[in-house]
Image (cartoon, rainbow, N blue to C red; front, side, top):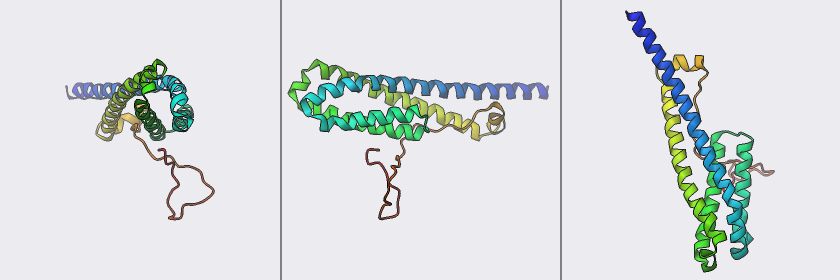
Length: 187
């Protein structure tokens, strides 16, 4: 009787770990869907805004979008991806805030539509990241506690990173005067 109970408990633990890992994968896929949606609307916003506010304000958005897409394409760790995405979010917020100050943009559908879509997408993206991080914390907690410590490695389930920004290091020919790391100011 005890062996049957232990077997049922072990099977239940394995299923719980597999469900947690699948939830993490699904949540990350949702984050990527929202990121793709954001990448889609950025060019329209940049085009509409650059005609009115000038390219100096929108250039950081274009650069941040390129960086974020490249970091994701190269499959760098999630912290670096989150850092690049944070830089893009901050650049977008600057353009959106500036766009609200220009009356001609407030009534220009070429700006209003992508601006609205980006604002909604930013909210959905924040929600998707919260869900992913919650699922990732849950999986990591399961892996750290018994029986997950014993089962996870056998199942090929590893600890996952949270989608939280880190500072991106920038290569430089000069070392900083204080001996610290050189960092990208946009991150």
